[in-house]
Image (cartoon, rainbow, N blue to C red; front, top):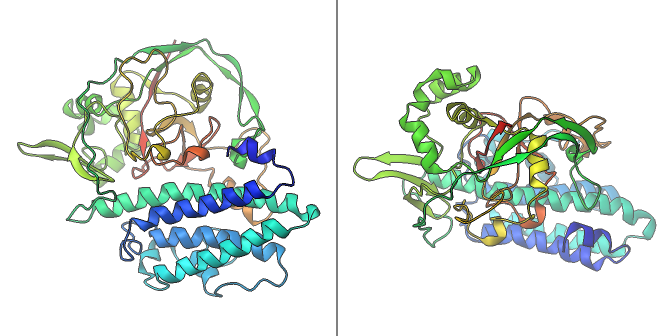
Length: 428
């Protein structure tokens, strides 16, 4: 069911129970592809083990629903609050993020038992809560469901990185992902007149607090590319010395390139006589020049745009453009789990939803009038509004029910393990 349909359910709890259970099972299906050993590893400080994601999303429901609304509730384990709190300072101390991969205990089986217990208790709470308390429970329940959907994407991002550093290069999916035979769709420029625009969530269905308040923004006339930048186009940037020419890079970006030794997007490799290849969730395969370039940082996206004598759209321009397209695309429900080339005969904007998160030129900051929610859940978004950039549109690993045109994803400008890519824009 969609968010508006769920909101219309009123006091009928059955649709909410079903949505909650479907979300929990979807996370567990993702983990089912992995061994217990796979679920324990952490390949870098920014990533987390699969079983930690499964436990943390469970801790969220236990902490903010069960403990808050059941006076006689007994926690599953007194140690789990320390182990599986992510960043909620108001809740208490927590295990260091870079050391999550050291937690061989509790094992995957115990974490599944934890999930089963909390799922059962939460289901009972939904079904039995009186009408007076239901509205308060519903607000947290809906946040928890959307929070778990975010972690479903993170499970795929993080295990992809973990498998990529394994010398055997295992695939998360056994089925090989073959390159397409078609050429990239011609790139066209779609013009927008600018003017005064309404930006932010319109109040229908769920939204995270950082998507509002809805407000007015002035846009100058602009043009936006009809599709995402492709691997073939990005190769031209590489071949033209893009990673060796500081004139294209922001100062911090150039320092990052030189310090990290970047010469191509994350997961790309070039081998003599074999050419370029890319690591995917189905393993390594030949680079498809027609598909969108993926796993680039904001610094790389910005440098590519400067090299192409264009720029990145700001998030207001992106949102106005996205209002002209259907809210559908290559998202996780398609089960490809990798970007796909744009339709060769498209007449309008392509790939605005799905495939890759699109870097914008907008720093992640509060909208006018923004106020974080009271209490510990207020730490969800607002505390990160510094030193990050906004991405829009979703990716091939984003749950389809989760995405909205107003959705504001955000990552530090050097981050590359997210499914992030590039759409060019220019002044009209």
